[in-house]
Length: 540
Image (cartoon, rainbow, N blue to C red; front, side):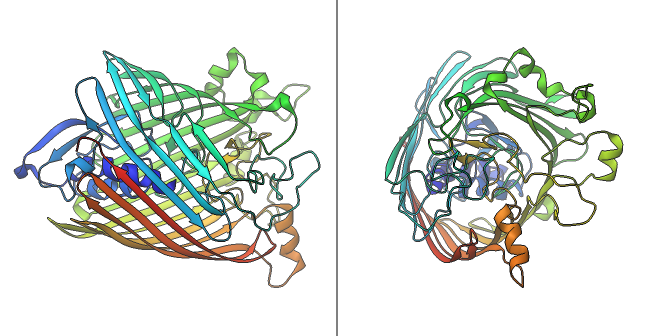
């Protein structure tokens, strides 16, 4: 389903950006309202590439949800067909979104990343996505369900961590709902997908949604929210576009949602849901064209602790000392808090983009603690994109991204221990057993490099990625000392990807081979992954 989403949006975002090339002489419709259909993947990558040519294309890449419209230019001389870049507006009240059928095949082990409600286990997984958007005055309704099939073949797995959890639950951690496998059989999912109901005023949008949310500038990873897991029901309020505050433009977003436990965690029916309360502030300083800054904060707490204070928890002071009492001197709380600082800088004159994210998994106790151990429980994403050899019918790019969720090496003297990213809450940072954050998971790190070659007919590209996983599980810590050199769960993957356009149809595909050493500290594995997606844009 990664391919599904990639396919669907490769169309919609494509043109929304292409128009951003300096093509005014070709007749651009400035400020056209465009609806994108992909959060991550080839389509989103194409948007950022075109933005390197002209920052007048205002893509909200630090905060993405599919119900947002994007104000961007459209030009007749775009690299790819305009019909492949947008959803099709049949009339003023109906917009038909592209329909995508995608599949992923993993030969040996699950590889699940940025694919929404589909879980890419071993064997064949496939998903169908599409629908329509209806408007009546200020009200918009998106009917965008998702359907998926998972063959879910077996593979060597770890025994469960404790007897209190399912036999399919994680064999490395007990504080996270992250099954190794979703039961013994094939299964089908029917999900609300990206559906929503939204009311828009002059510059404020509020609504009820099941959409995926992506908060972060990354191409492959983001720390707070990605679309690796299914969407979850949530209430949201946000500015439709940043508003002027004198020194720059400010955007605000907040939501309150309910995450649900998978069927393969524990047998306690009283703890099946968590409350997620999150906010994001974005800022575009005046006089710094192409620079966007943001600050995000999220709380996860047991559903049975929800009260009126839940909705104001986002205003809670940052230091744990503010919560300390005589009976609770360390300021412990039932909630699991994360915060993140985000930045993205696009330089069209140099066709260069630099971005980063720095996050904390745990709060500092007081100011001296913050200053002395600023790096405590921290993680980061750093990346760059360089476009080159741009002509009227081609554009190339190099990209690199580094992600680290290892919260420093915990075996260093003087560093107080803390749980890895995503493990604080009873279910961790998950929705129905899949990660809401970066797909590399707790204690993971990755390095990704690649090249893409965009042409009139589509694109071709290649990539290389190294991922080290689960670095702070008890099993990993045992193998640090049980062997020399120390054993780590490390994977090196290389692959190619491609896109081909044929009228209103588009085909996306990728093939990769991954060599994984000490998977789950059990054995070495070689996995071959094939993705294929077909997207049709009705009315194009």
